[in-house]
Image 1 (cartoon, rainbow, N blue to C red):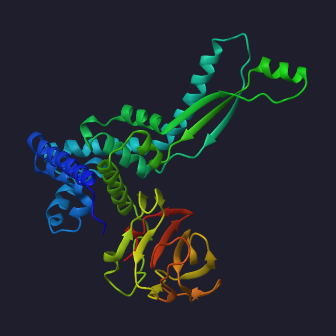
Image 2: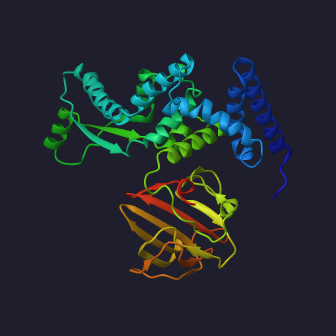
Image 3: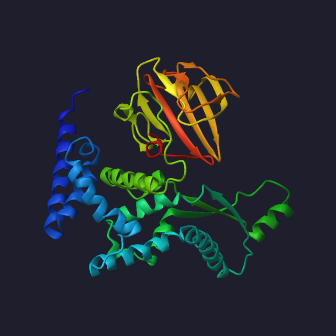
Length: 365
C-alpha cells in the first residue's frame, strides 16, 4: 500500500476529529444508541472488521432501522408503541412513493403551463422529453432517512413529497428553429415551441447534486443493503460460488456506488481468488450465454434459473459450460481469471431479478 502524503494524513485526521465530535455530541444529546449510530455512520467499514461490531450492530438495528422502517414488535411500553405507530405511518407514505413521483411530473407540467398563460400574445406548445426513471424505492428511503438524520420525529408526508421534488428536476428551453421558407419560420415563431425536459436523478447523481459527505454515502449504502436483505423473496438463499466457505473474506469490491477503480455504480460483487480457482453455479439452471473475449466482462457465463432470476459470472480464464447446458447447483462452470476490464484475478458475480441487478451479498450463502 502506498504511503500517504502529509496533506492526506491531515485530511484523514480532520475527518476523524469531526467523526469523534459527532459521536460525543450524539451521546451528550441522546444516548449510547445515538452515539453508536454516529460511530457506525462514520466508521462502519472498519467496525465491521472488528469485534466491537458484536456490541454496536444489535443496538443500531434495534434502535434505528426497524423503528424507522418496520416498527418494533408489539409492546405494552407506550414509548415503543408510539415509535411503532410513527414507523408504520412513515412506511405507508413510502408505499406511495410512485404516486408522489407521478404527481410531481403532473405538477411540473401544470406549473409550466401556468407560467406561459400569463403571456397570451403567443401560443406556446411543448415537446416533453423524459430522461431516466424514478429511482428504486429502497434507495429513496435510504437517501431520505439519511438526509433527516434517521429521526422519525421529523419525518412526515410533506417532507417526503418535498424530497421527491428534489429527485425530479426539469428545464425549459426554446426549441431550435428549423431552417425552411419564410412561412414555416413565421409559423414556428407564432407557435413559440419549447422543449420541457424532465430529469429523474439516479442515487449517484442525487448524492452528487446535494453534496452528500463520504460518511453519508456509506450510511445510505448500508441502509440500502439492509433494506434489500429485509425484502429478499424466495430467492433469498442461493448457493456459494466457491468451495471455500470463507469466500466473503475475499471480497474486493462490493455492490453499489464506488470511487475506485473508477467512479460509478458497480452492479455486482468482486471476489478475489487465485487464477484458475473453480467457480460454482449458485443455483440450478440453463446456460443462456457463454461468451469469450468481450471488452467489459471478458469471458463470462449467464445462467437462467427461471422466474426472472439470472446469475452472471465474469472475467473468467476458462468457460466449462456452453449455451444450452443444464447445470446443477454446485457444478463447476468456469475458472477464475482476469479477462476483459479487470485489474487482477477475480470473479465478478451479478444477480438479476426481472432484468434489475440486486446486491449478491444478500442472496448468496
